[in-house]
Image (cartoon, rainbow, N blue to C red):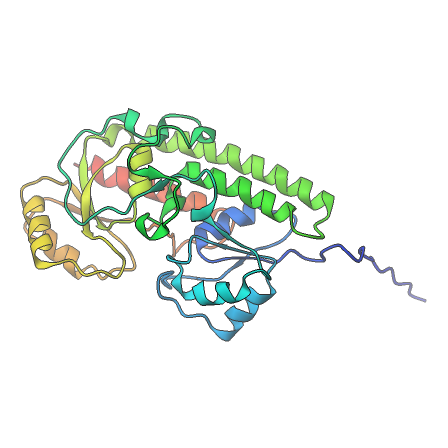
Length: 322
């Protein structure tokens, strides 16, 4: 005769913590925080753009059933803004751009910047990640008015630390989360912070030799990464993921590349390479790839680390060749 044993949870306990993250970097950090407790779900997979993706009925249902939704900002993941407003008060949403303590940088214009040696003292990368809020200048702000700020803030490891710790608190505050789960989540968060500190030191050492070497990017998505590590970006071909560069701006970019003012032009997998190849034609400029989302990297706890290391490796590899 078989005997069955049923594990009965207290009526107030959560059988499962349902966390949904919009983009791969946030999903990756959440997967590390929730390791051994729950598995977060990734909403926007592969090369789908956060700016204009369309929610399927199954996506809407998943968001409605979530205990917590993780996003950058409604101005970034525009496809979820209407659903999120409908869920207001029923499903909590943690917007990374609205967390107290994150460093925000203002959106830059399309004008090219002059070649300059950026002083390390201007950058947030000089200290331990826990000191991310020091040294605020004109470009740094915590004031809200998000349309004026660059949304790619996960590319600053200091912001990742703030997000991780706030995420652990938000999950721990959910009704019915068991004390053992909260303890594990807090331990995971502190282990993750330690790993992020190590990665930050590695990137500083890797990129320090290339601070004087100027480059251009196709899409102006790397402001946070550039500022943290003091690398010398002169601007971008296009200021936004869906904006088209004007003829005058393209002529300025072409002139800069022909003059040897930039050593590398970094494009992205999401953009067709035809224009980039045309811009560097007849010049000594090297073409390489950066991806701020890591769309081709397998989702999971290692995705964020692979993404950030790839940014450092690709920058260093191209600039070292010159």
